[in-house]
Length: 179
Image (cartoon, rainbow, N blue to C red):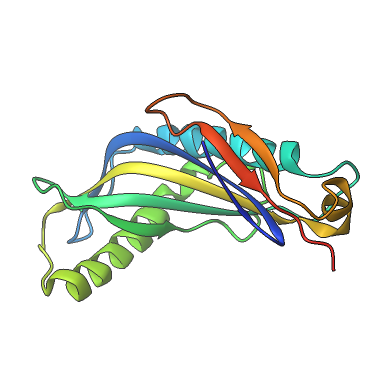
């Protein structure tokens, strides 16, 4: 897990590798069996990211946690990925899983986003090629609030993140500023 700290926010980032097809750019539907896998992985990442934010916040800090879902997408047979937003249902709350039934809608939105970004970056799209999700990620963020600023006395405080050598772990500086 990676932890990024802004003076006014607490953030965590969780990522998982998944090689799953979203279907072709011509609108072919994704594999129905992948729907539950996307829901399971996004749900687990979301829970872990929200828990990471909660662990970093000061006791009594109840500011809402915002969650963003993203996917690294590429065309089948290529190796260049593009980061795309993964749509969330309007009723999704922090900690909730992506609905398996919405995979077809999400696949259409992600494929459209990917094609637009690919066209902008490379100048062409590969009509009829399957779009592959190489990895998915969830970022959770919440305002640090006055409680966090008081807890660290307005100074940075080192926080050990998970992992280890080669796994993104290490000492991450968290700072809260009291004005």
